[in-house]
Image (cartoon, rainbow, N blue to C red; front, side):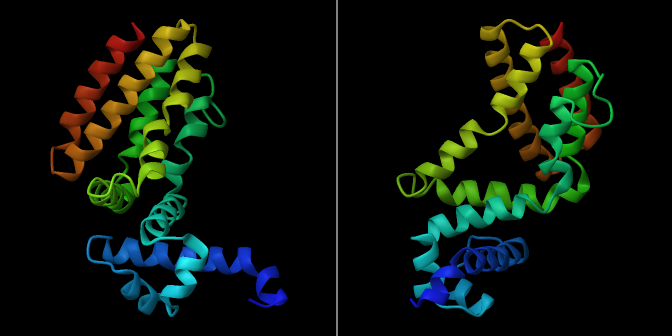
Length: 197
């Protein structure tokens, strides 16, 4: 690699990542080989491996890049923390708004990609350890912080945060499977009422 290529490396990596995010949002990840990805984005296997190390890490990073394109889901945590309109909302209202953000119809392509990528990653758990760590840690600290800020004791805030995030995952799955949105909204609202009581 030349000095010019080294200097350009971060932008080249980001450009490739954006192209792969385009591909996985359009085609999913199940039937994508590294060669097919390279062909679809006009690159080659060697370049993708240089920047990402493995197909698994490339897909993990591309999934995260795709996440950035869904502003309702991407901005949900800021709104949950009260960084914007409605900061004075009580914890129940914030949690209800978070589910409305996550389940918005605009986010369905990302939710489908998320579950597809997760299912594939389960077949190679050792190669996807970083992905599973990110998934396990995602959103829980923010929900915990919001609950603690609302006066929920630390141990209870952590437990309830895990409960809320786990419920979000299950509701997302049910939404994609065709469960009526109003039934999911009602079930979630009942659970949130119990949590913040």
